[in-house]
Length: 95
Image 1 (cartoon, one colour):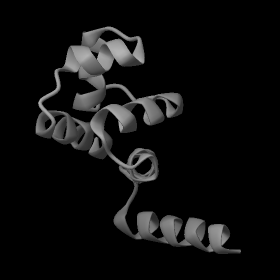
Image 2 (cartoon, one colour; image 1 turned 90 degrees about the vertical axis):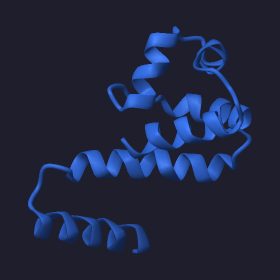
Image 3 (cartoon, one colour; image 1 turned 60 degrees about the horizontal axis):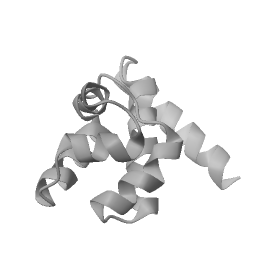
Image 4 (spheres, helix red, strand yellow; image 1 turned 60 degrees about the vertical axis):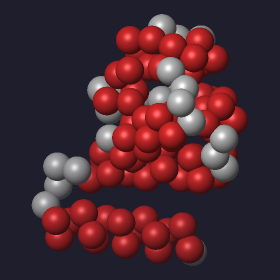
């Protein structure tokens, strides 16, 4: 849900309408609205388009998008397991 909140924040700061972003993504406005509400996930291919329209760094937006996926994956696990899983993944990335 982090990603949806963030793109909504960026969109509102720039005075853009959901229909403008949905048109650029070639999806309907209700579907875009679901992305902002966290009911649907944005596709990786949509990140560069959103970054350009929202005037934000693509890498930063991609990082938020990926963090949202990680949070979804560990959301329902026990706190201790979440932390261990994240540390394990970080160690694998650094290896």
